[in-house]
Length: 412
Image 1 (cartoon, rainbow, N blue to C red):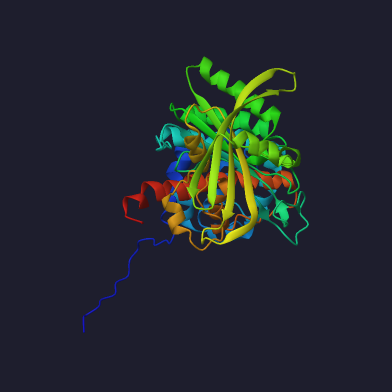
Image 2 (image 1 turned 90 degrees about the vertical axis):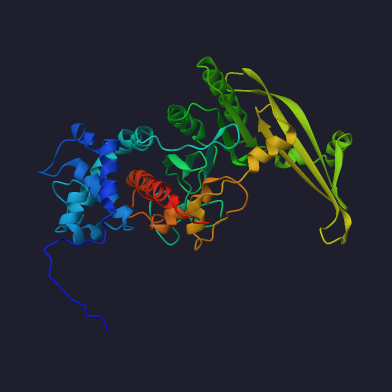
């Protein structure tokens, strides 16, 4: 039997030494600069309030009361370079006050500043760096918080909009919305805020990918305007937006069959498809005309994959608005290409769709993993600030540590 010796030590032991990396990231991102914009109150710096809450989030805690366990925790205070750790009441009151003073607008650049200064890898999908924008649902059923309403997934909650850059999925924007708000509402303003952030992080061509919820003439016109802005600066911006057929567009099946007659190709016995381009004129709110391209696909099935004949042919019509000059098959592949990242390999307990499609829903398990789906405030303005803080904690915590440390190990 081995002779085990026990010795007392004066060293401080802590279970959250990883916060040392978080503290360094706070310094790089310039979190302390917020003190020059918001004055110190009762000896408590604004940066201490924010960093304390971000530290809690990186430890998987979102409750204000959780900070009470760290008020006398010296490692927590030292690793995050805090002068003081606020009480739960101070944390709640100060964040509520900061929300009313537009804190989120002043902290929106923290993530991009961090990514820029550490030269974070931003991997392209073939020739373009993909910028994916979409909405997702945060289930807040059985709550009476402001803004909670019926979402498109038939649950009560919120429908935030998010933007993710590159194959790594760097979050460049995350804004809270009422559950009943349509995807397209205020999306143009969100795009105008996010594009400069993406433009400042990469010199490569950017490919914007969105689903059919963003199919509107005003949005497509804005994309064409932004493409011209990029071109004037010697940059390139392209887009792929899923076409929303709506009822009137799919009613006349005979017309679509007639157009597809010259493009049929057989994929397997009982299934064939037709791919063809279309040129469509659209107008913005000022009646300015833009000519855009749409790639159409019509799939006809007369038998299922097991060879069982169908009583009548089944037709599926799809389309994609695009500025890409590539072949039609390449456009569809760009729209639906999946981005397999190591984080998905780790998060296997979350029941979210990880099929071969790039949407923020694929990154949403990160929010669920650290209890970020339910926000502690009642008012939507205050919750939006917390959601922004949670964006920074995800950016600074999970993605940074995992991508720069764990990726060196064969996680696959």
